[in-house]
Image 1 (cartoon, helix red, strand yellow):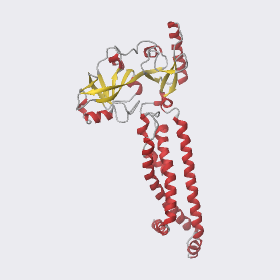
Image 2 (tube, rainbow, N blue to C red):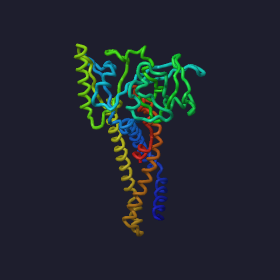
Image 3 (cartoon, helix red, strand yellow):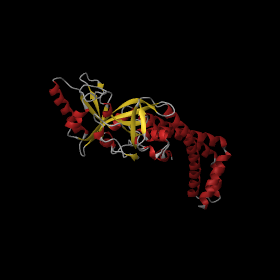
Image 4 (cartoon, one colour):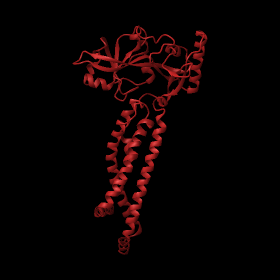
Length: 373
């Protein structure tokens, strides 16, 4: 340990003696690490981290395709899927609506998710407080109850556990708070504030009628051991049955995994960007290696003198490795500082078509820091 400390002190002293070389090397390493770490934070948050639901690999999203071949909103009645399927453990649906929250100091626009069927059961996330909205509470004639997201609970009620049982006035209608979701539950969007049952609005929504689109989308949990292909065949069968009953061609559903539904087209773009910045890092390493080789040539006399004084080959290698490690760690620390800025710039520039649930997952977390190291 004593010789290691001596090597560290000597390495720092040698780097300080050549500030120009040290500054260029640290800057080069830092920029390469900053670029790679910033983009890897996107890869980790968007592609590697599982979505904040139970067993996301079993969740699928039916995209409804009309007879013309274009994707449309949910037009096959959700109850047909739910009642006739043989491959799903559960099925839920939701629609987004903006509501005006009153009763406070001033009116506030909030984003509500109007849920139907086994929405919360399908996602499989336990509430932080209280309970969720059960399936039998979402159909026609549902009571005016509400489940809050954690962020809204903190913002509106200050994190008060006594929020359960209190009321919210949305567009002039009073809802009773029955639960609060955990902080990591930001599904399907980080902008969501409140969940309410769709059945409460049954007189104003036509989701029970076939061919009626209300911007509703469904999500299903495959039964244990069922493949996505088998579930697709099951939904195709239901569409054929409805077509026979109605006497005309019905829209069909094309299943995709939940991950594909959220990440989809951006997966390839992110990996291409990651490959590009990896080349930037390789170029930075090559440049620093060239600087070290050039500096090594200028230190031939120093090396010969130390060898003549009895320094062994192992000790010389260890000394130069220590110097390289100090240089690398210094550049890495500088790179992390740049990456912290870079990540925030990246998040601010994320395209609008990237789901907002993914925005909050892009950060310098432990996984990204280990990657940077």
